[in-house]
Length: 545
Image (cartoon, rainbow, N blue to C red):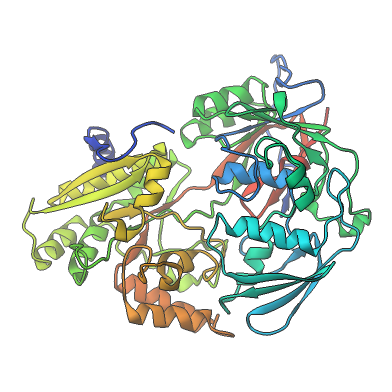
């Protein structure tokens, strides 16, 4: 046991010495309610420092900036943290649940396997008093579809308060996913905006951003309460739509140490999120509390399966690579005691609908000797195979790849790590780009596998190339996926058959799990709401003083 531990730590140390290539890549850095679990002796002898916002403001630190406030353009989860304080969706659903919570949607009827008739409330108004009708829902969906690939084939206003939503799939969860995802806004408000919501906002939640000094790109965003909210029936208000603070200031703190110091010193009251390397330090402060949020990011790698890839038609080689990876060392190095090695090929026991405990077999558990044997079986002598590892410039993910690089070198595989900035990385990640043999995937694993996880990784119908995301053209794989996506096809037998196929064929491998941790001043914060099992809704944070 001790020898294995030492071996893992040697891998971590070796990884730190790896040469990282940035050739052709950018090298710049880039629904639960709070339970009362207060512990410790309090901040005795510590002076409370006021958060650095205007009087009475709630100041929330977020770890990344936004290119724009436009609710329909793409962005990281930090974009969602701001967008859903300003805009509502038709409904919401906690990751891992099948139950919809209506918000703007009064109800819906399933017309056929692909078509849904959605009714919205007839008294919805945005923060400026503009009425929201079915035409605005159509407008919002069309804006969203300009920036995101969706399962929506057509969206039509039938009258002022009914929308026909036609999907191009019968897959379970497709309807639930899209009605919970698209922010709804008034077309009039958008057209009246001086910059089409780039630095201003107007949604149906009672907060707006006025632009000017309230929107300083890369530094801060200030949302101010309007005082009116369209849903006057309190029994129908979604918990995530609560409006507690008069003013919400988002401070953008991209450096992990900045975020930790800000919450420790009281300059912010809530931090989303704390870097794993700083969690012990933050948790040691008597007045601070950690809030764990399950990560719906499947932290796994995909193997390029195009015909010119060494992995094409070479199962032994794919298996050799997976057996070479010490995922316990990765979890230790990336999670600082808060991560855990994966025991499944993909999926999350708490979030993935259809997850089965029978999957928990530790497939491809670290075995370098077996990896060397399989490498020979695959036709490669030591040092004769060169693999390119594609990585974005996230510090934690880079650490993961450095350890994998060391693991591969240890079994005789020459591995080159290419670290790219986000935009370049996104364009390279498609297997047909020709830019990698191994790449970090990171799809969402919450909800139905046909909504994101397997739909993103393996459904060839999503991609113009006619191949999977990693470039595979496996007819059997698509056949098994289509069975799950068929009407009434979301059965445990079908799900397990697909899982076993991708596991046996070594197409993908989840490396480790690492939850996100927010931190807050428990003397200042009395309540909050976690939405989608992903992030804390800042508008729901209640201050106790």
